[in-house]
Length: 137
Ligand code: SME
Image (cartoon, helix red, strand yellow):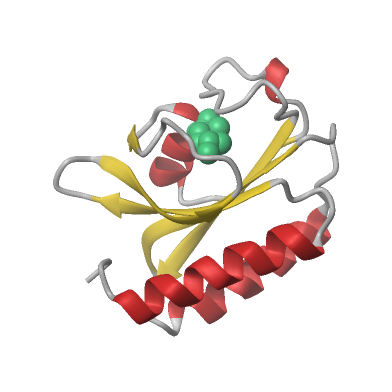
């Protein structure tokens, strides 16, 4: 059910809206869980194309959130051991899981070229965004 065109279009517009309106949001995308294969699959996104369209559970910041079901704020990606670099310009990252009826179905992932830009306001805001997104499922 992740191939619904109108939902993907809405998510794509949302990614662009967030990227264009928040100056330190430089890449905004959704990953969705494939539980059978224990991997994340890249969904709609705004920003530079990434090679990392499939991420195994546990790998990188995104893969760790697939396992932990918790927000992951990385103020400085260079200080992370388990990190997958998408672009050398990325300095920080935030990943917030997407729950539908209490089940983690994926996540919103945001990269920034700014060091340590994310606050609890970003966490609360992205939790709100994901709660709205969950209504599309
Ligand atoms: N940096 C992520 C990989 C996804 S890209 O940021 C789009 C990670 O470590 O999981």
